[in-house]
Image 1 (cartoon, rainbow, N blue to C red):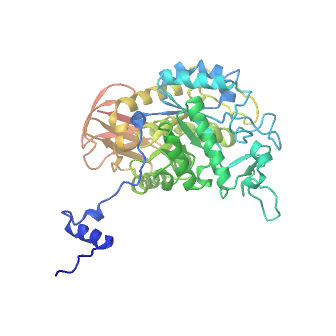
Image 2 (cartoon, rainbow, N blue to C red; image 1 turned 45 degrees about the vertical axis):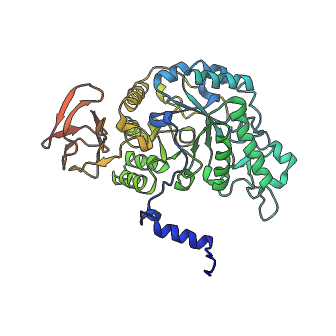
Length: 456
């Protein structure tokens, strides 16, 4: 009589693994980014609205009237700065910072009503634009409604006092304690509320790296059960891309080109950024490139102060290089001021060459598949030249389109020759519309801070 066959589950698994037709199955690469990027984001651009300063009225209703203009400009995603009531305790300035939130479930009456905001979102959707709102999960105003009801949800220092974010001068806010499960549930419920009630399309999350990744992973999963959302992290970290965020900031891109414009670095600083972006970040992880934003404009200088004569080239690189470009409200009008942060300071709207440049670049991005975002776009391939410390040159190419771009990031005229032959082709020159044939003997002369973009 034969003994009964006894096979454990573990042994069965080993047997199945041994019998597989692919002995390398366990070694196959797995995608790091587990979330699915929405199809509409493939060539999307972002526009930041500081509602307080966006119009003379400083309201959602007034901002709504400008949506057709933004659509014509080529904008796809509207990032609206915090819409919530602002704390009064320890407030900075007469109106306070929008990032000192008093109630996550309410609308700042200075900007309008809940219905006004819902109308704004509906009008944007009618124009096929998405709306994401600023979310401040790391900290609240001192007089936030949660503070009154649940002081145990906040961090304290060694003296037992509530504390602003350590090492920063954010005296108008205090930090939340993410070791508190009930606080996490309330924050998640608040984020779900705006998706359900106002039909927003996602969030731009303030100082996202100061909030635990597991919170973001969970909140993303719960939001996606309502509708697929788009999440932008104000942070620079690969970890946030796996399950939570579609896009993160390219802070180090900004710092590199800013240092170059001020003579504190050469083009190698940009090469470091692009090397990290290509090799440390998955292709599906989108990065946001920007020339300015509310922080840069208010505290460090206007786009003109930040980049001077290098501004047009910097704007062009933010669009034709790898990355999803952001425009901060007022850039297109040539806003010459550092907009006040704690009081009303409306933008003066007027036609300006920078607005024309952005529109042309956005049109090019949408039409040329090599310039699309993330995994849809083509990887930048460096084209060596004879002025490597001052000139950045690269090709982005796929089966449909090709782009060759050359940037003279120096204050001297440069006669540029190129090595290798990837760039050789017949193109249309961006700006002039002229047909141009480039070959191995081509020599380009670019003025200080000049650039050329050729497309096919």
